[in-house]
Image 1: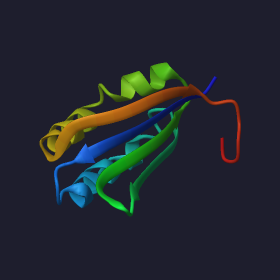
Image 2: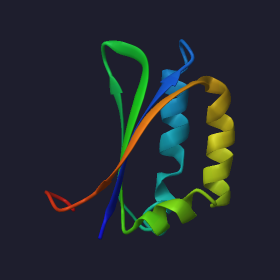
Image 3: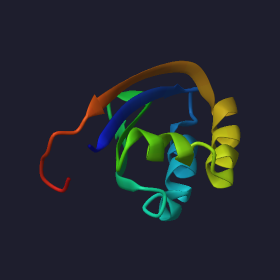
Image 4: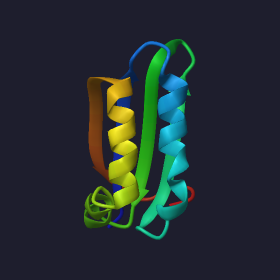
Length: 99
């Protein structure tokens, strides 16, 4: 059963585009790690908010992706640019366009 993860994160003022760039740098390896969908977006009326929507083959694929060296490096680069304010939600993906 596919696993979904939706996350929002608040950046320090003026660093939203930096965080988006970091999140988008490593997308090439995600498919091989079991990722079906990885979408990074921003909210135009909130200049410090980033949202990420992910669909993975399974929760295990998602969890293993967090141990990849490139993922760890991206997280280490992004953390100083974030406020620590996160909201996330897991979901079981039942279907839909592109799933």
